[in-house]
Each structure stands twice: as structure tokens, then as C-alpha cells.
Amino acid sequence: MNKPNNSNNKAAPKTNEKAPAEGANFLKQIIEKDLESGKVKEVVTRFPPEPNGYLHLGHAKSICLNFGLAQEYNGRCHLRFDDTNPETEDTEYVESIMNDVKWLGFDWGKNLFYASDYFEEIYQWAEQLIKDGKAYVDSQNEEEVRVNRGDFTRPGKNSAFRERSVEENLDLFRRMRAGEFAEGQHILRAKIDMASPNMNMRDPLLYRIRKAHHHRTGDKWCIYPMYDYAHPLSDAKEMITHSICTLEFQDHRPFYDWCVENVNVPGEPHQYEFARMNMTYFVMSKRKLLQLVKENLVSGWDDPRMPTISGARRRGYTPESIQRFAKRIGVSKAESLIEFDTLEACVRDHLDEVSHRAMAVLDPIKVVITNLEDGHKETILSSVHPKNADLGKRELSFTKEVYIDGSDFMENPPADFFRLGPGREVRLRNAYVIKCNEVIKDASGKVKELRCEYYKETLGGKPLADGRKVKGIVHWVSASDCIDAEVRLYGRLFKTAHPEDVPAGQDFKVNLNPDSLKVIKNAKLETSLSKATLETRYQFERVGYFCLDNKDSKPGSLVFNMVVDLASSH
Image (tube, rainbow, N blue to C red; front, side, top):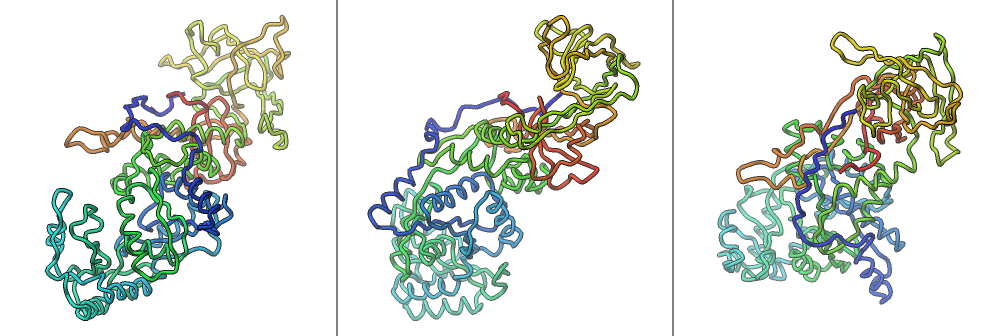
């Protein structure tokens, strides 16, 4: 059987930092210290996605982290949508994110919030900053703001509008809200320090004019708070104790703290940063993933090769396996590169525990058992799971004609090939030993049929009459009592470990793996799979782990996706 190409080209990691020890989590130490000192009475975390795209596996780690810590310390975790940018947000993404969080096994209960719930309060807090002389309306255009902000080598310059009076600022800000001005005509900025070495403290934006329809508030607002302003205030309003985010927000923390300290909010949240998840053979950029979708290089956001949670769900990953993965890779401040093999190992470990066993022949060759009568049909019982007797038995039909996989036959086999060949013997899994006596070919010379005899005394693993044991075991299905199904074999979407490492002038898409999907239209499956369910995972014995496709599979026209192979070959 030919599997999709999973290139073994493993470039060196981009960092020399080691991944954290399995299960390491520095945040637990912080939380335990806060609880012991009495600084915190109840742990309150949050998962705060922007509803502007589909979540990926990096978000899954954050979901497991925030909800997991709340569970472990008997606290609560909020799901809050930071919906401050109406131009990119949509209810489609809100619903997708909620489904992803639920699917991963977490429940926010009554703690579902939106930053847009607080728009009026956030606005009033901005007015208070103006009254306190800590914010001003700036009328520079976008280019002037950019130039006067300076850079890492030179300080910024104060805006000519920085010293407007409180009264003028309030008047302009209220008129901004009333819709009197065009987009870009005015912005509201915090008055902090244009010479700060931290660019995020050089009078950061608080509000901008956006005459766009909001997915929840409609056309009520035409000014919207910036994420960096709304986010800490939302945390404080919800009494978040531990605001956990990735390291790229570390330089934003001083402004986070400034907002909490300078606005009269009820809570005092503190921001903690951890290293974001980087993984081989994946890109995590929303912009680049959107490119793949829009250019039809994948079938959609839920394409089983995509690193999205919806893609992982459709591929057949289980919530438990992703939770195991999040726990195994740990939480650290040190940047590290996670091998894709680590994720697959977690998936494989869980699927081995829960998957129902079945047989499927993906590249069928017919075997005619010559010493069986025409119409012979014998029922053989086999375990649904070898380690879980409670799942019971399944029935296999042993008939005069069966299918074996083309990879299990060689006309001129080498000495270390222990499967079927002319004059050779092999055991049909859970059934009998057979011997190949004749090879039938078509006009082109392709093998189309094998004629074999079976040894009646060998059922159930028993040896041949002369005491010999046969080494080779192959899977099979009855030719007359099987079902046809489409089987999709998925490999890695990219052929190199670091897809974004490309020569100058080239695009990351040059690293797409052209062999990442192989579709088998008429695989032969044992009949028990006619009752396959979306919730159940299956081990096609000697092949890999599979599940029904949650979009394309229909009764009578089944489609199975390969979740992962039985053992890593990389």
C-alpha cells in the first residue's frame, strides 16, 4: 500500500533552546504561591480569542492551559471574545470557537463574555483618562503618527495636538462618538512618554474611528477601542487573577499595567507570558492559513491537513489526545520547537486505547481458496478490542474468495519478506494459514488473482499438522461479504520541517507537499464497518487509525480518513 509522502527532511531547529521537561509548568508555581500568600482567593483565568478566524493547535494549548489551571485549582475560566475590530470579525468565527472549546472538553458555564459587552464602560473610562489629563485626541494623519513615533534608534516626537485642553479633547472625543468625523481624521491616544524605550508606551492608541457594522452591536458605535486598551480593562472588570498570554505580548505588559493602574477598575489582574507553540511541518499564521484556503490549496479551514482545531477534529484527533499533547509539551518561557512526531505520538497513544479493531484492504488482490467449496461461508469471531473484552466480538466471514493487500504479495520475494509469494505460506489474521500455488495475471502482466489452498487445522493460531509455525500474518476481507468505501490517506501538508524557511523571493507555498493526500475510491472493508459512527475511532489492523469523515461520509457512501499510521516512520 502506498501512503502519502511525509518527507523526512528535518531541518535543524531554529532555536537551541530545549523544550521544557514533560509536564513542566512555571505558572503552577506562581499560582500556588499566590494562593499560599493569600494574594489570590480564587484563581480566575480566561481564554480571550479575537473572533476573526479559526483556532489552531497553538490556541488549543492555550485553551487547555487556561481551563486546565482553573480546574486544577478549583477556580473558573472565562471565555471572552475580544471583539474590538468589526472589520475582521464574524459570528461564524464566534460559533466555530465555541464549538472548538466544547469539543476539547471544557465548559465556561455562565462565564461567557464579550469585550463589546463593556463598550460603554470602556468609553467612559476613556473620558475619565481625558479628564485626568492622561489621554488626548490627536489629529495627525496615519503617516505623521508613524513617523513621529520614532523607532528603536530614536525617540518619538510629541504631537502638535498633545497639549489640547481637557475641554477640547472631551468635545472632540464625544463628536468622534457621534459620527461627525471621517475615519482617520482623529484618534484618541494615551499621554505617557514619547521618548520611552518601549515603543508600546509612546502614547499608544486608545480609540480609532471605524464606520463598520459590528457583529453584535450593529451600527451603534463608530469608534472602537484598541485591543491593547480594551483587553486589560476587560480582564480587570471580570476580576481575572492570572492573565496568561504568549511572549509576543511581553513588551505590551507595561501598557497593560498602566491601564489597570490609571483607570478605576474593580480588579487587579497581572499578565504572565509563556512561549508560544512552534511546531515542525506547520504554519500557524492566520494570514498564511487564509491564503491556503482562499487559493484552494486545501479544501477549507477544516481540511484534515490544516493545523486548525476543526481540521484536527475532522482528521480524527481526539480531545483527549490534544490534552495529552498540551500536557506533554509543558509551559515555558523559553522558545522551543516541538516535533510533529510528538503530537502524532499522543494521538496514537490514545487511539490505541480506544479504537475498535477492523480489517480493511486498500489495494486488493483476490485470493481464491481452491480447496473450499463454492458458496462456503464460515463465521469467525474476533475481538473488537484486544484489551477491552467489554466491547465484545465482531463477526468475520471466511469465504472461498478473499482479498489481501497488494503490498502483502511479491512474486519474487527477498529472504526477509515473510508474507505471501509463490509456494509460500502465510496466516490470514484471526483465520487460517494459506499457501499460494498459482499466480494469475492479466494481459498486461499485472497480478489479478492468487490461487491458494488453506489448512483447516490452523484456525485460531494453531500450527500446521507437522508442527510448523508460519511467521507472516496478513489482513484480509471476504470478497463476497465486504463493503466498499473511500479511504483518504493524509500526510504532512508541507514537505519540509520549516515551511517558512524559503530562499529570498520565494513563497512558503513552494514547500507544500504535493503528495499529502491519496484518495482510494474502492477500498474493501469488513462488514462491521457498515455500522461505523462518527464518534468511534477504528484501527484498520496493520494499516493505521481511521475515522469517518465528518463532512463527506454518508450512509451507503462511507468515507474514512486516516488519523495517523500505526507507528512513526520518520
